Amino acid sequence: MSGPETDLRAAVEAVLALDAGVTGLLGDPPRLSDTRDPRAAYPNASWGRAETLERGADGVSIAEHRLSLEIWCRNGDPAPIVAAIRAALFEADIDLPAPWTLISLMPAYCDVFTTRDLRVKRGLVRLKAVMGRVLDQA
Image 1: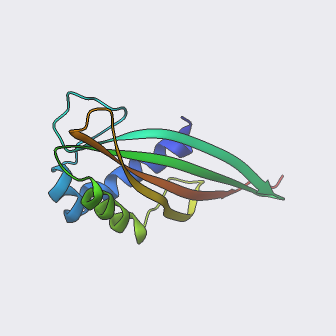
Image 2: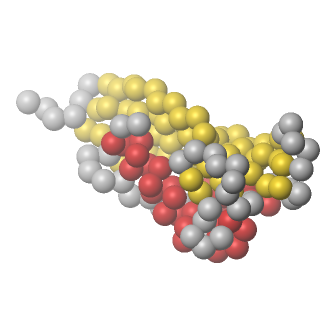
């Protein structure tokens, strides 16, 4: 993952860590890891798939990032956690380190799934972020 994606993910984690709805369900600090750890205390969350699409125009670089947050619950429903994450990020005011500016951040897709282990359910929040920066005009 490159610098802008890392900065975006850190900013999302900071927003979630400050939201009472999220910390009330995932702990304080939230149980959120880079990859899924099936030994972690439930419920927990982990980062899933990440995708970046580069776009731009004269003098401007645009990057569209799609990040997946996976929520794992044993003997419980991940839907309230999915809703809390969605609410926390819906109106988040995120400043990224220069030269990038966050143009938009939205939960683009949310769902809940069963797994092979019928005691464990998986929630999914896919985020779509658009970031931009002005390129040096020489």
